[in-house]
Amino acid sequence: MPSYEYAKFAKIYPTTGRYTNQGFQARVTLPSSKSLPQGGSYINTYCGMAGFECGVSVKYAPEFKDSRTGTYQWHWFANGPEGLHDGPMCEYRDGDSVHIKLLRLDNEHVQFIVNGTTVYTSKGTYGTSTYSIDGTCARYIIGAEYTRYSSLPSSLPNWKLSFSRLQISEMMFKNAAGSWINVNSGNAVASLAHTPSGVSTPSPVDFNGVSNELANGRYAVSMSV
Image (cartoon, rainbow, N blue to C red):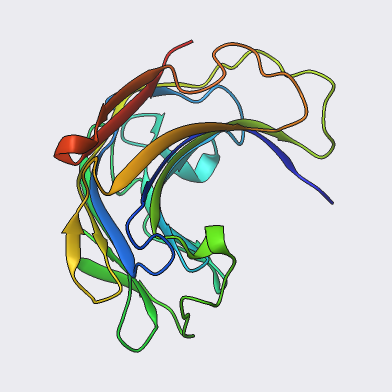
């Protein structure tokens, strides 16, 4: 059964060696405040490569509710061809700084590192030609989903999910030779996107707070409604 996400995204990817790079890493400073308006809505921020999406997320769901604060808080996740693996619930709180690193090892296993600790290593191997072009690309994604549909609706409701500044810094990509390269405006680009296609999206169409400082290896978005 098809699934149609009502979602908004920011994407950062290296233009240098785009489809042969071996990893991506960054420090994410989580929003200090957010509003998840309904069950299932979420915010994800992650590195992607070779079919894997690994990062930090929060969701309007009981398991994400922090009993200490009564709010929904964050944990790490590793999603990909070997299923979903995730860390302790509510391990990170609004405003925390978390460093994430996704890379292909010399033996072509994929590894995910959070705050300097290896939390997941793939059982299988994944070469640069294993996946489609978009799935292979080493990249960084910020995503927020308000809701989803089993069939494409004729119209979309007004967007209600909001969050304060979510910043990515210290961005680097691992090139085909195995060297880590600082991300800057000369070797990477950033863009905004939204889904679903085929139906008009109410304003604001994309994230409406953007600070593009790729020249200094930083990028940030926020969403106000």
